[in-house]
Length: 284
Image 1 (cartoon, rainbow, N blue to C red):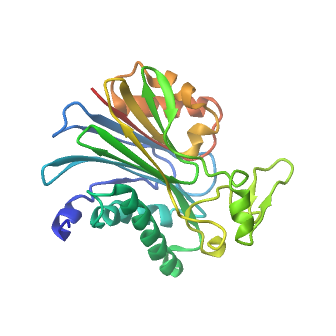
Image 2 (cartoon, rainbow, N blue to C red):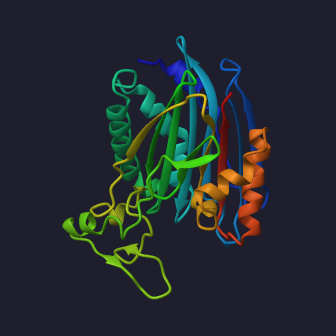
Image 3 (cartoon, helix red, strand yellow):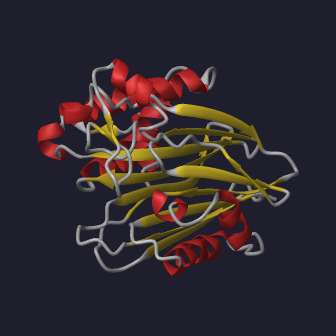
């Protein structure tokens, strides 16, 4: 178990909610010199305040080097995304199975965190958030968990491979209908759970919780000599770029912060109007 003092020190995270000014963060591997990371956020064209938050850091826990990276894309406000930014990794690291069975630990932490959000719905509001979390262990093993449509993509020898799962309502129609919900398909609109939410899995969304789960999909990837970098980004990137487009866009940019900013700039040039948050983690 990790002490409260250490968990408190681990809260050196990024959350950006200003409606006007972009933010960026760059980190180098103090302990894992072969791993560098950078991040950038950009407010979209919508009238509401910035709803994205992110985490991007490298830490030493006992004798292990751990990278913690996450994108939280809120909807109907930024309160749930902000709560995740402050609490989800702490909850994951508190799990007794974290070092022995990380998949069980992730699923348990996702469930507990969602329960906390629902219990705080008066304070946090009725909105929710997607999430993609990536945990890098000793620079060798990458574990990705996600709900919603924020995405993790790894480049190996220049070839893009998606590590997360887009939880589109059409893809999970049978599950939603088995719980008494429905998926709308209105002309000119994306599929929505109960005619409202454009993702089938998310944190929060109390009014839809019977039909929208927070159960994550989990992938484990070995970081070998072929692995070049990982991109984590909200759907403001993926609505206008394919996985391979994103990899091609930044594959020659060695500075991960510059790469994250360049990827967002490219998404904006392709007329993305959403809030966008992006993290790039480079290996070797």
